[in-house]
Image (tube, rainbow, N blue to C red; front, side, top):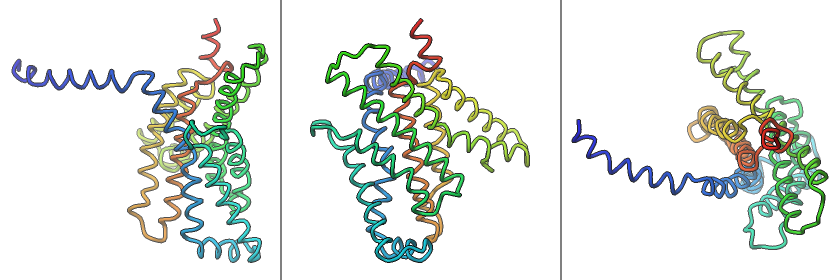
Length: 291
């Protein structure tokens, strides 16, 4: 037994050294700063590129199913691609490119999120609407972060109370909107939500529903926000692979699965921003810090 321990000990030491090096708070912050905004806009990059790569299908959808004329349908598609690709490029471009246009790009993409369900006839799809609302929460957090950054750089000399009140409300709005998809999955999902608990109760769907509801409520009230948001991100990542494996479905379903797969990645990006920036003053965590 001692011989086995002696052999394993060097590997444990290396693992601890790497963990201390890469899992520090500063390292996590760098990772979240780079990955969060990128994932948040990833669905817009994929959708914008798909417009050009699958132009005939997109055009047929607009003119055939949606009933738009040729000119209107083409205009909507070009507008959609320009806003999504242009806004995404401004969000993820290197910080060395000045001036920053993250805030303006976030407002543009936020407006597109509001218009998209109506442009593509998805306004009656409850799942799609919940995802859109969740993405909106991610952009509110991104706008808040950019506001804070600009105020610090410009040194406007605002009073802390005046500065924090509006910022905390904006961050609270983003945090609450980010939880829509989790409430939807915890209550409505047929694979683990309260819907399945009521129709076909078993230990797995009861525990999964309670876990989602508990973590979501913790995010809403801002309790242990960093870790609850991080766990929700991990849960969402695993469920995304399970629910939307576009690489292994029939060709007719690839576009549908791929769209929801990338949209879920963007929701994960929003949760990463919450993990990075915290819940703000209007939260249990924020109240503890102020005491």
